[in-house]
Image 1 (cartoon, rainbow, N blue to C red):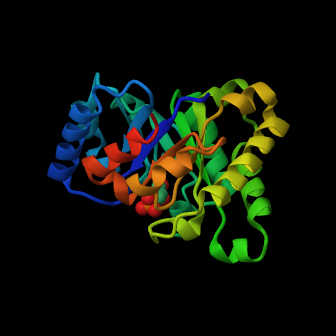
Image 2: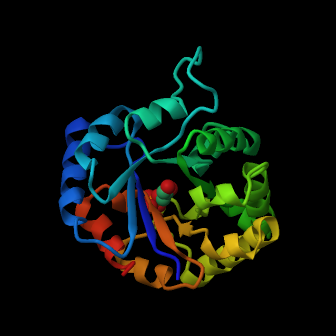
Amino acid sequence: MRRPFIAGNWKMNLNRAEAVALAEALKEKAAGVDYADIAVCPPFVYLDAVAGVLKGSNVKVGAQDCYFAGNGAFTGEVSVEMLKDIGCEYVILGHSERRHILGESNELTNKKLLAALAGGLKVILCVGEMLSEREANQTDDINAEQFFGSLAGVTAEQMKDVTIAYEPVWAIGTGKTASPEQAEEVHAFLRKLLEYRFGKETADTVRIQYGGSMKPANAKDLLGQADIDGGLIGGAALQADSFMGIIECGK
Ligand code: 13P
């Protein structure tokens, strides 16, 4: 049994006071949770404040992106070193909003991932197909391409610091969740890719989160699938009670 890992991606939401209040509420409500790993990923500007609130608690802090180069002349970017400096433990990479809105490639995602791992951050690597790709029967091809491309040059040993998040783009923020069977089919496929690329031991231990309109009402069925080991939550992570409702489904 893999230990569930539930992470909140706050995306570009909340103001400072709301971010701090949400962190404070989660710190208190999640204090007794011993059956799952929990993380929240606030916008960069609130990371320091949120990390301060959550220091020493069982809610870990992640960033939503990072740059691959060390500190230097990269206007607007944030380095792995800076994230480590403020107590950040995780970073989300390859999110579909970065791939499709910001145009980030597998190659760029891979550079960021290698830099993050080398710098001591744990990575949540997102993969997922768009609706048009699913309808064209390209689901496996797209997920495989993102998986192999983003993980180029990564060793099995490094995979202990990587979580995969399967996020079908058509289910993100749409209220259209993948059915547990649809999600499990892709998770099982990703598990096969893990085995092919890194061996069985790694495939058995790496956690694969589902992301895309996960809510307290559908989390139990999704998390009950053999290869779904957690969730990467957007909208429902913006309120302590709904996020906790999902965490409790990981029991
Ligand atoms: P929603 O839960 O809002 O669909 O977002 C999912 C997601 O993109 C998490 O990274």
